[in-house]
Amino acid sequence: LIERKLPGSIVNLSSQASAAALKDHSVYCSTKAAVDGLTRVMALELGPHQIRVNTVQPTVSTL
Picture 1 (cartoon, one colour):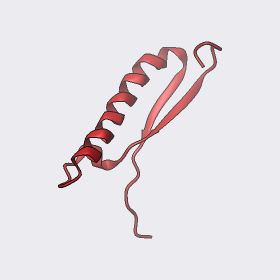
Picture 2 (cartoon, rainbow, N blue to C red):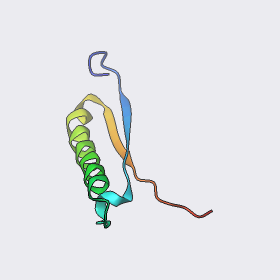
Picture 3 (cartoon, helix red, strand yellow):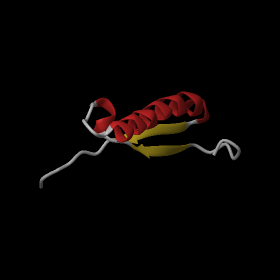
Picture 4 (cartoon, rainbow, N blue to C red):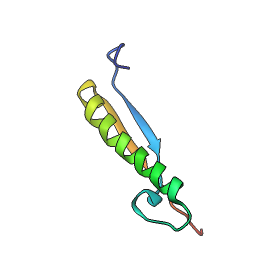
């Protein structure tokens, strides 16, 4: 996108577990927190190139 000077968007998949401490889920929670951090940094770096970066944090639903 940068090379071609095209705007765009990137959507990363995270989890609400990135902000919560869940017993016996240390690896899962920490990697999702890393995805959140990466998304924030990518948004800062790619924003000037008209590329949006966001995270979706789905949760469990009992519909």
